Image (cartoon, rainbow, N blue to C red; front, side, top):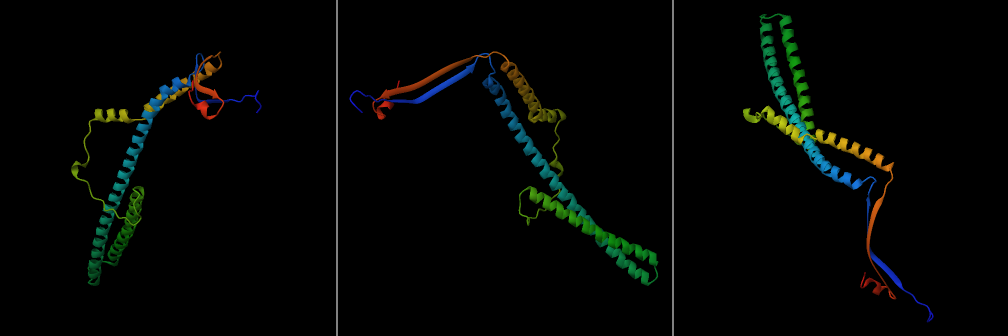
Length: 219
């Protein structure tokens, strides 16, 4: 550069701006209304999912319990049918019963065997459903037990309704939908009207012959 030339650097490391509509649509106002509602709704939906998961687990557990009890009954009936058939063979040898009676006993024996096979498959299916739902290994084995008599607690009807309303997300979903509709209507109305904005800006800047010095004594 020659002696009559001059160079300078300008720096503005901080710039803040805020725009607020006066007559136009105020998105911040609606977010302030909807955000707490969305947060509370998210909490209730989480509780709803957890309650549904517990309900599924309970249903799977009792499905397994019922299937196991049915299998035990079927095995007991099979043992009884087999015993009766063996007795029938001996009585048939001494002509104490007819051929038809013996065939009926044999049919009962086979029917009992089929029932054992059927209930055994139901136990396997119920076992798989429960262990899969709980995220357990496929080789895991759960032995269900019949709950004690005091397993079910008596809850007053008024208390059940109160808790149901307190944690039910549906009323909040309805309220959120209504607010969203009001928000959209307000935006449509404001967007079709004249609008004005208030703009506020704040910044720090400086200029100097050297780049390093421009960041000193910002104003």
